[in-house]
Image 1 (cartoon, rainbow, N blue to C red):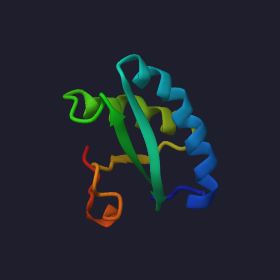
Image 2 (tube, rainbow, N blue to C red):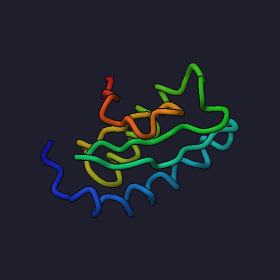
Image 3 (cartoon, rainbow, N blue to C red):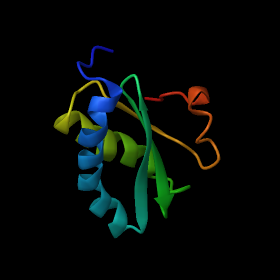
Image 4 (cartoon, one colour):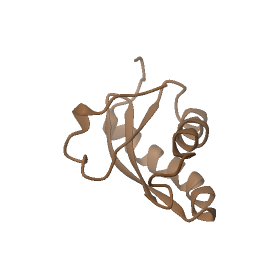
Length: 96
């Protein structure tokens, strides 16, 4: 990836961008939390009604990831962190 920002530099911008998608998720009883940013990969955890929802992968790609790419950089990628995997981010893979 050729993102011209450090992970620390990305943190405030990612948090700001996530605030834009939270109302959309809240309308359906869901939520999202930033877990970490590593090498341009944004690790988030879907909350409440989003957990286990059949549309959650579409929400991540076409909602969350798209918003981050529009606001910050087109090469940012989002990975959902299942509950209980917060300390095992290296085991999670980006899926298209």
